[in-house]
Image (cartoon, rainbow, N blue to C red; front, side, top):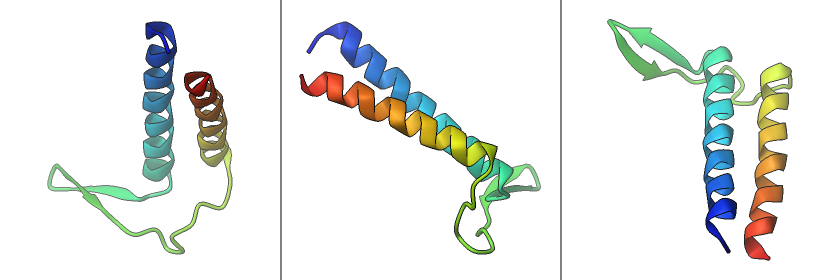
Length: 72
């Protein structure tokens, strides 16, 4: 395991988290009340596809590949 591989894994993890947060925000999971961000439950507690869910899936696949490199 070297620095380049671990840095890549950290970057992929950040990307995955950012994509998930974008998906949640665009699906209405968060709302701002009096300047404070609060959590609001999604009507069916499920993401039913769309461009944001696809971005999360792609980031997850990239993260899986990066983690495989770490295990080598």
